[in-house]
Amino acid sequence: APGPGSPAGMEPALPAVPPRAAPGAGLFGWLRGRCLGRSAAVDPARDTFRAMTGLYGSIQPADSVYLSTRTHGAVFNLEYSPDGSVLTVACEQTEVLLFDPISSKHIKTLSEAHEDCVNNIRFLDNRLFATCSDDTTIALWDLRKLNTKVCTLHGHTSWVKNIEYDTNTRLLVTSGFDGNVIIWDTNRCTEDGCPHKKFFHTRFLMRMRLTPDCSKMLISTSSGYLLILHDLDLNKSLEVGSYPILRARRTTSSDITSSGSSGPRAVGSPCHQNDSGLLSEKHMSRSSQREG
Image 1 (cartoon, rainbow, N blue to C red):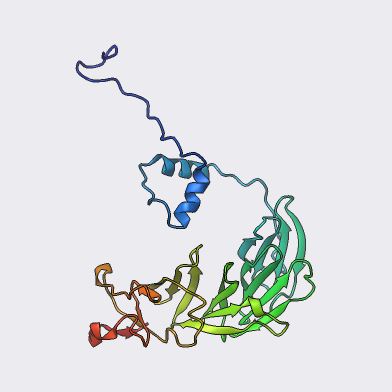
Image 2: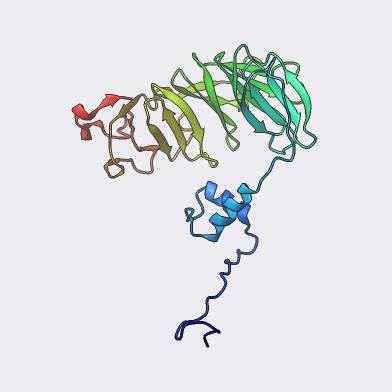
């Protein structure tokens, strides 16, 4: 029956009850699944979205580390070791800083890690990590022996901005302003470096990232394009010239042509082709093409 003061024929409002989470599933598990593409898209009306924004909105720093910029300059990047025991900091003035994230204590400074700005850091495991720099090189380091580099990797001809790592194949993937994405085989590293091959090239390359499961590669360019390579196989693609040409055109998502499951396929604008007809150039009018 309607409560006191309720209009006739209307049921009283019931308090909203959030949906019960599945056994073993939590917010962080849901976020991890979403990151890997295994969850539904975020709906602002869902309780999970409200819980997520409420959680992150209430986070406050537990501690702060104030650094002097007299020697290391700007902080360009941060990276935790996989076990969370070490926090590494990439700095503008050739330095890499190492901290204990629990005690916030400064552990060590690699004062001349590179000859120019250190742009990015990526851990290969709990002890090995790689750094890249505007000096065009990538360096491998061992936490157990930080007085010297494990090796220095030479292959880029301009500033190296990104490092990615596939833990399954132990392949290191780097990108630079020379337009190259290079793959390094860390399984066969020596003091002289690692075997490497050019995986991809495009003009105006800015940044490259791999998805967590390494099934896709995302590349952004300074000309305003985002390129996505699907069905990625870093092992099969270790051939110079696998993707020799990048063509760009203004297009809609309904105008995308992709290949079958036999090899990587590119989606979006720009469109990408290779000699085997990854995306057939004959379907594009010459007037709508321009080099990427």
